[in-house]
Length: 420
Image 1 (tube, rainbow, N blue to C red):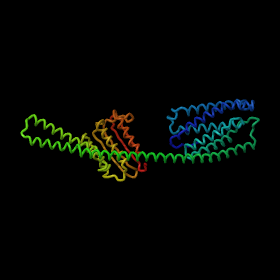
Image 2 (image 1 turned 45 degrees about the vertical axis):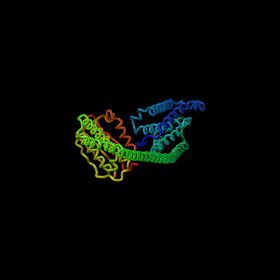
Image 3 (image 1 turned 180 degrees about the vertical axis):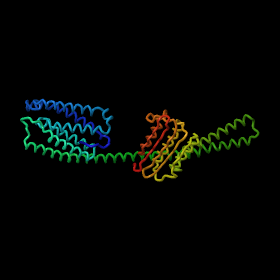
Image 4 (image 1 turned 90 degrees about the horizontal axis):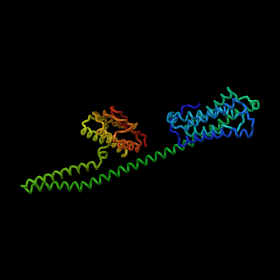
């Protein structure tokens, strides 16, 4: 009756409404014998064994549908087919009930519950699925009328007037389905568009905040670097010069004094070298000075020199038009990935590829090392992996890590061109 549905996630609250629908149907089933006995103690629903068995069948149908909707394992197992199966079973059951039971003029009337199912379809899917639901239920109703007329109970043999009323009900319900489904679907579509705009605005706000944070951090690091360069580095440099002058002026020196001065000179020069190295790292400006492509080339070459790995680079000369937070993300992910390879992979060959085209920006880093279980993360380094995923999420990029023991690791970071 319904074709394959789309693969969207369930709308918030929809499954809960469907479960309440099943509960309400169960309540109406319990009320039907009571109300029918009040109005007509000899109601044919209970005088005909076939109809009694049919009523029991529909009760079992409701119980099974309830078990289906309240079992999370079924949802995980069926995935995208979970909701369509439930809608089809519920709709077919209601139409059968309407055909065989409600036509006997009992209290039970399934039509309102068909409207609930229609609302669920319009809520979750496109209007084309509302059309499938509407005409599918109509077709099933017509087929049942033609091939299997309602039970011929003497008091209720349908006349031509009654049959015309039945077909009139079909037409009326079909038109009302289409109108109601269209209105609800338009409202839900507008709501989804608003949610998407809000999500995009939140993402842009997060990106802007991340960019401001990175720029503020970079400026503060540069300021601290300048201050330390003008104070500590100059002081250590002047101290090293003074020690050299002291050793020259006080010739000849006692052996013990000379040894002490040499150690002081060595300590001062070592401290000066360490200070300069720290100042270079503190400035953290390879992206500002070289751009993303050259900065990744630099850390890759440094990685190759430190590890003696064979590093194959496939990088463009320059990449224009990237915002700072995107450059920071790709640079830091490359930095973390290479650091993980150096610490854990024991690789012989590493490839670093960066491409930028109409489809977007993509970086791939692969090694032939020992690999790991990607679901568990690198042993002892889960925070590094988590940090890479968080950085990718901030800019709306997709990070994929494929690895297995003794099979190497491939990391792929992709940012679509139309990503916010």
